[in-house]
Structure formats: C-alpha cells, structure tokens
Length: 331
Ligand SMILES: Nc1ncnc2c1ncn2[C@@H]1O[C@H](COP(=O)(O)OP(=O)(O)OP(=O)(O)O)[C@@H](O)[C@H]1O
Ligand SMILES: [Mg+2]
Image 1 (cartoon, rainbow, N blue to C red):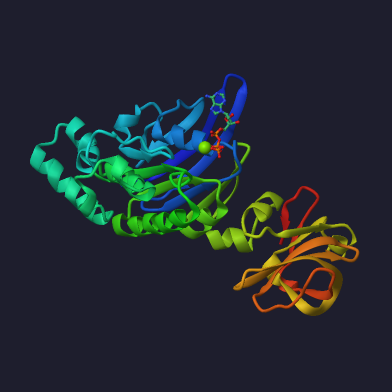
Image 2: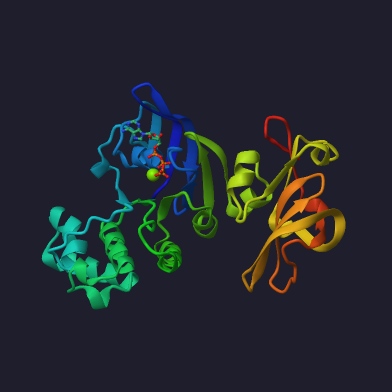
C-alpha cells in the first residue's frame, strides 16, 4: 500500500515560510509529479514526506496512519536522489544488496531480491561490474534497484534524471514509466521540467512559492488551467497571453491561446514574421501581430514562411482561454 495524505502541512526555516500550507491526497499506486519553478518548495515537500525534514505544522498520513513524527526508516518509503551515491568500490550486485544486508537478510534472500530487481531494470549483465564501469543511465538504474529491493510503499524521486544528457533523459523517463506500470507502486516524482511532468504523471501538482496552484491529470491542466500561472507553466512552447483591447473583446483581462491553436494562412489577425524555425516535423514562427504584440505559432513542417513575410493568423475560437484581473480562469 502507498496512500499518502498531507493535511495543512507547513514548513518554515526560521522566519522563512517555505511551505505556507499544503493539503494533498495521493492514492495508492498513483504516479504523482510535483512540478514548479526553482525554489518553489518541491524538494522540501518531498523531504517532508520522506521524513528528512520535520514539519512545522500539519499532519502526514501514510496508509491512514499518522507518520508525521516517524523517522525516515520507519515510513517504508524509498528516496532516489538526483546525485545517486553508489559505493564505487562495490559491485552493482553489492550496491543493490546493501539495504538488504543492513536489514539482516540472509545471503540467499539477498541474492533472490537482487536478481529480481536486476531483471526488471535490465541490469542482469552488469551485476559484477563496479559503478565506474557503467554509463550514467545504468548507474541511475542501480540507484533505483537499491530502492526497489526494499519493496517500499512508495518511491520518492527528486529530479533523478537531471544529471543525464537529453537523449538519455528521454530513455530513462520511459523506463521509469514502464517500471511504474510493472510495479504499480506509488511514485512521487519531482521535476522542474514540464515535459517530464506531462509524459509521466497520472496526477500533476503544480507548485508556486510553496503553494499548490492546481492538481489534475496532464490533459486537465493543459485544457483547463485554473489560472495564469498554470497556463504559462504547462505546455511547450508556452501559451501566448494577450491583454488590452483584444482581451476586452472577450470580456477578460487576459486571454491565452496556445501556439498550436493558431492557424496560418487566413483569419482575423495580421502580422509580420520575425523568426521562423523549421524543425522538419513542425515550424515555430514568431509573429509581430498588428495591435496585439508578438505571438508564437506552431505550424506544420512544410509551411514556407520567412522573416519579413506578412501573414494572416486564425486563432481557433474554442481554444481561447479567458482570465480575470486576479489571473483566475473564467469558464
Ligand atoms: N535548510 C534551509 N534553510 C533555509 N531555507 C531553505 C532551506 N532549504 C530550502 N530552503 C529554501 O526553501 C525554498 C524551497 O527550496 P526547495 O529546495 O524545496 O526548492 P525546489 O522547488 O526543490 O527548487 P529546485 O528546482 O531548484 O530544486 C527555497 O527558497 C530555499 O532557498
Ligand atoms: Mg529541488
């Protein structure tokens, strides 16, 4: 089981209120991603759940039991860090077995669990190597292996892929998603990368200055952002935000339209192309639109527009998001 409940959890360091108050329900087996800009409190919240930091106020329940004052070792959770500290002088086998050895399991039990974990993680062929003889991705898998053998109620990941190069991040991202499908254990995953959040999560928690801005499935947040912060944070390239007369026409302070929801060729807006990036699969076009400002447009790969061209743009009417003066969505 791995159900985790946060009730009015607060954390201050001295008089700095890092987490002013968080309520959150994480269901057993869920893949939950904490996402938000640097310094918003993602790691702090994860460390509170792990028990590596004391809560200033509030309650943390694990499977319905109050765990607020339990030491980390008694919470039954396993944390995988960004900088995976493997023992360099030990083989992969010994690194993965380490927590089992500390827990006093027999050699035979250790071997059985290590081999099962290695199989899930495709590490069987590397069990007798040392960490120095592995790639970054393989080392990260060893660190995950060391967490798996403990059979935790939940895995807590703090930016586990941020030391890896772009291609390896994509591969590891998929491997962690597949691991979740195989183990069906609760996972809480911290990242500032909204693409990781969108692709991995069952449920995304968007944090801003220690507060939850919105909780929902990736597509919920994409289609129905509750406020300007979430609208600007989720989606890549970012949603265009427009104020002034154009917004007033929609009875809003601000309107938002995603780059992929603006058609090129005809339509009510006209502007001058400032920049056109052709990626083959897509084109990213930056347009100075008359009376509105600069908009980013995501068009097809074959679109032939260039710097200085005058073009017309067509926002899809039912894809326009409206926000009030407080930045809250108007629905
Ligand atoms: N021990 C501490 N004492 C004082 N302030 C702290 C301490 N630990 C963290 N903070 C502050 O709490 C805030 C949240 O930090 P946290 O590490 O949780 O952010 P984060 O969202 O994980 O950021 P990043 O994406 O950069 O890792 C930051 O402003 C940080 O400076
Ligand atoms: Mg952090």
